[in-house]
Image 1: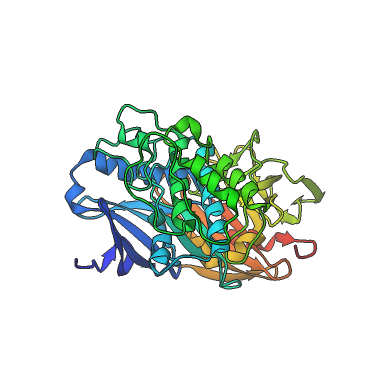
Image 2: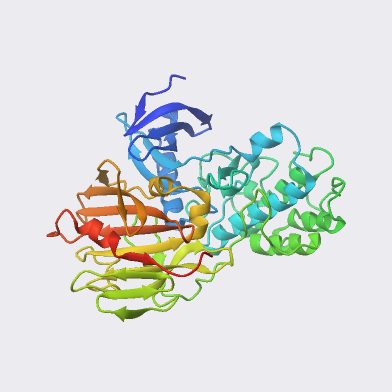
Length: 466
């Protein structure tokens, strides 16, 4: 296979993998000095509208869910020959399949990893999505950041068979991978729900923890066969995995969250941060009034979530964040949806605009979203974070840096043809708080060239390091 020199604006460095329906290349974004994974629909499927739509549906689903336990999609595009491609975050740590090919993982690591995978699938289940193809090849690893080179994010990838988008693929007789596919997935008339993923997670757990390679033959009705686990695995874990891989869905755990809770009890271990695996985040957004910011990739704000106030003329505060707003603007305190601190609580944010509660939904309004995240600073750099926040329908200018209020900012401006004509993405590390400050700005159409730098100069962070 001959590697293309470029795909869209990205220079191609090497092949990452080849699947049944797509090829994945490692690309380089020269503007943001960042590497990305580019997934291209295979040429032999390019004229099949069902496959093409499934390919695009996966990108849309990942963009809609936007969670750090799922592989991120930055944008989509189309090659000159008409084939679509999706630009994804690069999982630089490879896949679980790669690691298992090199040998079994230590028992404590395998147990913790299984819990992290369950937590990632639980994100899908909370949104009514069934993955249907949970295999070691679809569990990826991404470095957490240069400050902690041993820490990693565990990511769930390849949502091409997700049931929320395709109840029956119509592409093959089976919708899944033998050895991990639930029995009902082989029956076109069966109901496939979250318990199918529980089966896949159970089979994944057996692969990670069994004393000998698991049987890959199709499952049969009746009790699940006994599984002999490796030394050091708590005995109760075998019963949890047997329940997860029961032939009949009604005999399994109801979803990934319930399976994870059962594994935790069986391991006699409460969820806690462990070396090499990112902590488990508690999501507390149920019932919140969420305001989506303009960033493609859906950062969000929960008005008033951490308190808001106006300490002085023209300034507003939300937790440790204080901003000086332009004339005629106001602000509301917020929490940053999808961003959680080490204590599991949402990290702080603030939205400012002439009408801050309408800004995200009304493209005619200028405004800005300001967020503060210590966990993001621990996993990536400002430039790396901005590489995750690209706008597919807009043209970026070269990145620049500016020092304002003691923070070295990286700034990328986008010129857009639809909705807001200009979007500015900026991020910097606050030295005292050891946290990343992110500011997304939709400038007024009549603003001057100094508007962005003046706004950044008015962003302040107070309080001790967290």
